Amino acid sequence: MGSQLRVYKRRIRSVTATKKITKAMEMIAASRIIKAQRQVAASTPYASELTRAVTAVATGSTTRHPLTTEAERPTRAAMLLITSDRGLAGGYTSNVIKAAEQLTERLDGQGKEVVSFVVGRKGVGYYGFRNRPIAQSWTGFTDAPTYADAKEVSAALIDAFTTETAEGGVDELYIVYTEFLSMLTQTPVDRRLLPLSLEGGADEPESTGKGELLPLYEFEPSADGVLDALLPRYVESRVYNALLQAAASKHAATRRAMKSATDNAEELIKSLTRLANAARQADITQEISEIVGGVEALAGAAAGSD
Amino acid sequence: MAELHVELVAADRKVWSGEATIVVARTSSGDIGIMPGHQPLLGVLESGPVTIRGVDGGTVVAAVHGGFLSFADDNLSILAEIAELADEIDIERAERALGRAKSETDAAAERRAEVRLRAAAGASR
Image 1: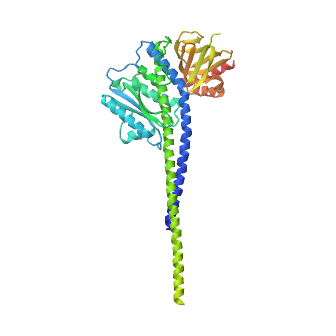
Image 2: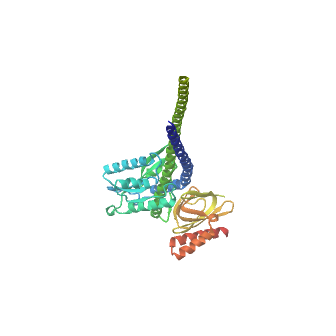
Image 3: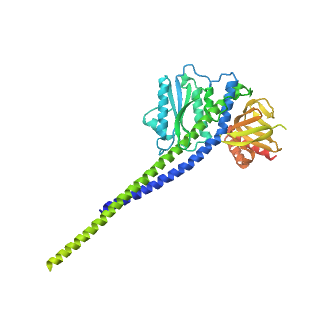
């Protein structure tokens, strides 16, 4: 019975050690959410001013720009999937991949071939395991993305978009990421980035008021020139925003997963302690009865010899 | 005196905001000065210093790399991928970067370093 008690003690020790680790990870993730949220907030003025300006140019000018023009018969679509580099985040990765799969299916149903661009090691692993082709992938910055990272990703996307479809380019550009709604709610979403639909820019809560009349702008150097410079910036800023939100969501998911891991460990320690106590009691009871039995046997033997 | 509200925003933060009497920036077709009451304008910015003359007579100079400005209703937004105020610029570092860019003949980096130095010099003048 003594060995039983030792086994319980050892398990309690190991679960306690694990609990310490998950608790630490939970706290780290919690502090990172705040940081990531602050970054999202810091990038908001730029994004909203940009959306405003793009809307102004797109509505105020009659120019047709390749980035705003719908292809007559779109046959290929690019999808940017944003996942994380690391796991231990509960359903975070599988949820966003599920959203990507749904989008792929939907586009397939519309007769469009999907070209996948993937951010994050988890997504790359998923596609690699299934031997699915990836046009390009980026890893290593999902925890704290910078604008330069977003620029790099967008450059590849815009490049694919401006290439003729026959030469391997795409007609549409979608982005799949996890939207950070609150500390408790993060939902995977898919958005169409290009071609730009005018109301598409207005789905952001921080964009211009709907009824606001946009002034008649003078363009410097020209409406075309401004659009040329604006639209890539717009894509970059949207990708940057998506990367930041995905990072914040990932940290939130990690925090939640680690919190439930810590709770489970506590639960486990509690029940193991009870079992250990019972085993100890059983040991003591057994020892007492052994002693009593021994005394009685001795007394019986002594009485017999008298 | 009439004044205009200026927001200088970089991709990842708000750099400066406040009231100004005139703002001078470099667009792709030359330097442009914007005063209150200017016609609504959307312009593409070149890499270069942006000079903001505040209402209190002080001058703010910032180095801006790529971006654009939009002006309407006496509100001016200057959006730049990278924007630095002159007093944030580390002159020594910019000079080192300039030397390095020259030796590596990296035209873009050289231009960036030059703009930084010019903005820093413009502020201390």
